[in-house]
Length: 196
Image (cartoon, rainbow, N blue to C red; front, top):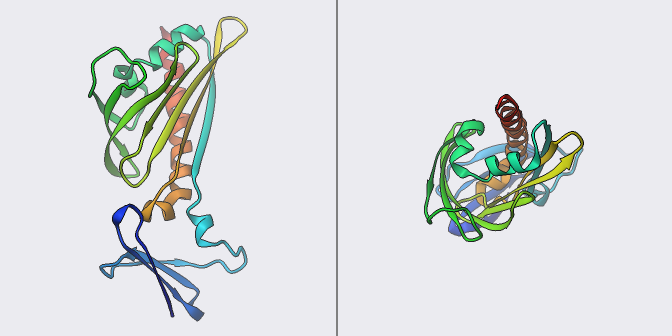
């Protein structure tokens, strides 16, 4: 039996490899663990399980770029098209600019998440980047808009981050759930804007 200790984000975790059982047990150092079966055929390492999450989705919207970008860069609209976002509170004063901080409350994978995003890049009608460094899953969200023929817009939404602690072991699950949620959210945005 081999024991390893990790302490990402100040939280100690224990990893126990149970030789012939082929299990990897992961959990807090208080003794509660979750057994993950090891797939000897794939030879996936612990580092591979904890790889960064990078999810990009895109959609074409039959509205001009300025209209789409203006709507998306108004955080007060986010709960209208993001299914998982329950509310947003401005931490800093309006309008949205580099350095703006926004408090989000969202539901994801059955859990309520509270986090603060900070705007780190804003090019009107072209790009918005927001980041959060708090919690077990630091995230960067990027929105990019470009012109298509007939006054349509191509929009990309990218979420990427480096999960730490136990979130690192659920990263593949989180990436899949995030991809599905983003597709639904972009479809809702498209429907909402094309009805205007």
